[in-house]
Image (cartoon, rainbow, N blue to C red; front, side, top):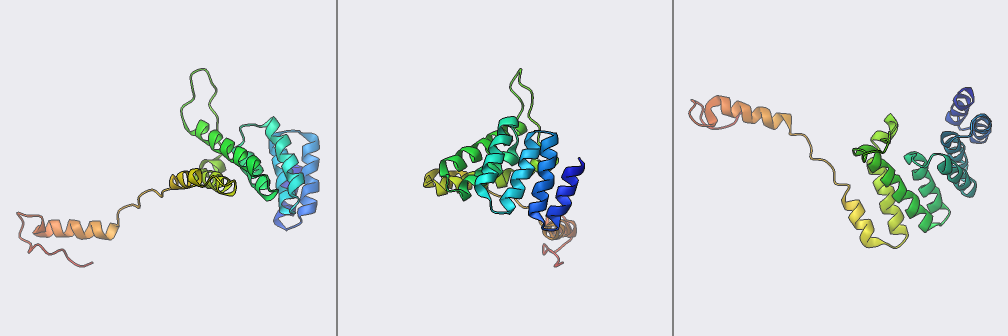
Length: 184
């Protein structure tokens, strides 16, 4: 859509009020969750939190399974000191993400994520953890944040080469080597 492209260019140039105007033109042409989300983002960048919250709520009514929209709704609820709204929106964000990444229940259409949303589960989970902390739910916050453990690191290639060289040199038993791994 030309209006959204224009709004993106304006936003990229830090012309947030004009970007909001261009996004509102797109919204007037097509009332959908994505356009409400975009206008809300421009309001958020102008620190107009109450206005952004209203746009995100309207967008969520049209697109209740949009995790980015729900995540930003949770964030703007936090900025507006609405801890309950922040927890609700953050929890809904995680529910959407889980529903989209697990096999659908028989008879239900699968939810799909956009490519940019696919890798955002840590951000969504952290958003829920922070919303719980701000709402005073520290035990739940700790449990949620503990789920953000990092995946194990891939093995160090240098140590694998050293072990292989040691084995080939006879260090693994039965060979002619002296059992000392070479230093790489």
